[in-house]
Image (cartoon, rainbow, N blue to C red):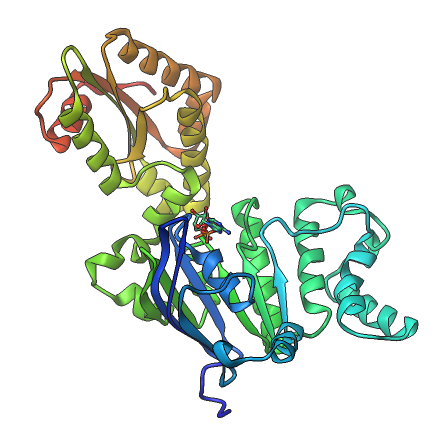
Length: 397
Ligand SMILES: Nc1ncnc2c1ncn2[C@@H]1O[C@H](COP(=O)(O)OP(=O)(O)OP(=O)(O)O)[C@@H](O)[C@H]1O
């Protein structure tokens, strides 16, 4: 195969589970020796797509061509040869708790190759040293930190010197700084060993710094495939959430609605309200977030929003919703027949800010918090309803 032919080609892959279509004609290329990223909304089918490549799932229709060989015509032995060229790093690391770090890393070598004891130990030791795990080689996964466990998982993925490595959300559960470390680790080893990497991730914009090609999976199709620069320069409104990394990150970080889905939800609440049901809207305006991002970096701002979002999610009653209306405004919305719901939301938020010793925090980072809330009459547009709540904003700190 010519070196310019993609190593893996997915053509019109469709897959449904129990009548629910997950992939609807997804087409993408994975180029040799490149880092290819697959991004998209949670539950959008990114893992399902990759599971097709590694043979864990068979497509309802479409074709996969691996190094020129179509899966539809492949024999079992061809397929096991492909598997031997691949390696994986999963989001939960998938380390075996009953095995030491050394044994975990040695496992793929034992499974795939018949090596003598010394050869095996040399290879494992080399990876252990490379990933600075010598001190913990005889420990068990539970005895080491989450960051180190990721390094063990990476060492295990690299130990067979694979040609292709699939990373399924390799940074899940890590704080923003450790996420960057994992990506720079992948980048560093990619430069050294030149494998083909396929990374499923939510980490925008971090992934843009290391990926050669970014693919966006949306509604079961690849709606963009190109370089991170091409993506960031795109003015396609359909790519807005992805090109505006920050907003996307907020949704992924917090699990809250983004502006568009928040507005839709508020609109729907207004339209669905019946009889004595009213719409409660509470707004939290975080003045100074933009300045905080500009001067102190996004990480601190994200950490703050995540903390707030986690708290809000903890007291949201069923059926209510919360989302970021803008970088500085968080909105909580619910339908209710009980007028005290508004007071309840307001007092919960005040308690949160009190517990955070927010005065010190905000003073330090020059943030101001304003909380507003209103019981809104039915029939208002989402935008007007949110404005009505904002108009009642009172400075909290
Ligand atoms: N074997 C299966 N049987 C039935 N449904 C499945 C199966 N595998 C995946 N799904 C469903 O397919 C959908 C897509 O799952 P997938 O794990 O690919 O999403 P994802 O984009 O990787 O999400 P995340 O980023 O949250 O991990 C989910 O609704 C999931 O429940």
